[in-house]
Image (tube, rainbow, N blue to C red; front, side):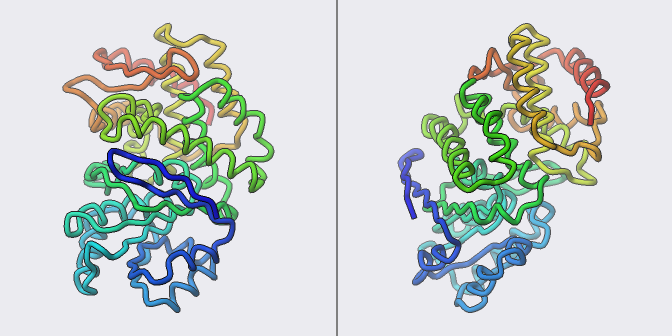
Amino acid sequence: MREIEFTNTKEKVVLKFFDRTSDIFKDLEGKKCFFICDANVLSAHPSMASWLNESKAIKILLDQPEAQKNLESYKKIIEALKKHNFTRKDYLIGLGGGATTDLAGFVAATYMRGMRFIQIPTSLLGQVDASVGGKTAINFDGIKNFVGSFYNPEQIIINTEFLSSLNEQEFLNGLAEVIKHAIISSEESLNEIFDEKSAIVSREPETLSQIIDNSIAVKESIVSEDFNETGKRKFLNFGHTFAHGIEYANRMQPILHGHAVVIGMLMASTYSEHKGMLDAADLEKIKQAIGSFNYDFSNINLDVETIVEGMKSDKKNQSEKITLILLQGIGNPVLHEEENIENLTNFIRDFTENFEK
């Protein structure tokens, strides 16, 4: 086990890397814990399920975490915490992917105005994105992450063994955020993703640990400067305004967040080139890096009007403008407030008509 410490605002967060899941159990001994777990993760990792069943920990299982990341689940968990006399000094532990840790974090942030919180992200998306930065949220009225807060965990526990049970598309779901961090960081970082494609796809532990380390380092360096997202942290939303519109268009049959982000990054990069901000050569590098992985977009609805409607409701927007993160080069993201919604809509229409699923 190795540890990395970093500080967001005045709070210290400990990032722990374990080589074996069994070591995680030892680290939690002696703590009064309430677990919010992705049931699918426990099915894929029987040793973790056995430990939870044998321990005195209270647990709530989520069969469909993204669909259950809502007010109903929040209320159920708060009631269970109260029933079992949990205090602010006890531990709430989120075990699962990003949706599970988002919900767990929001509960931890608001129960008795904040209780101790440990994240055990088990998806690549959770390990490189949801685990770092203190964002917690639940979905509301069909809008993703509409109700939330900023709240840091005391510890983030990472183990690449969990990634072996992910199917290809779920793994690629998380890789989208790795690619995003590389694009906004540097051309060298993006080249590394492209060069290590084979090792990434085959999930070689050493390579995965390295890309997770690098990705977390990019996000942590930004978050440490702007925890409450008033400036530089907004760059982490690269591709996400378009992505939220795409997710809104698919809200009746939800899609993987990372797949929406990948299309959103392609849209944002192409729009940057369209506006004369990004060189065609850089756009091509981004397309090649993303295109080298086998993303399945076949069942994604790209209805233009609905995408724009979803983008208009994005919480990052100011007044009637749509807030976008665009590129002036790989490693050089910029904030752009789009006033001409008609032109943006026409661009999205052209993009979707030429997009190959």
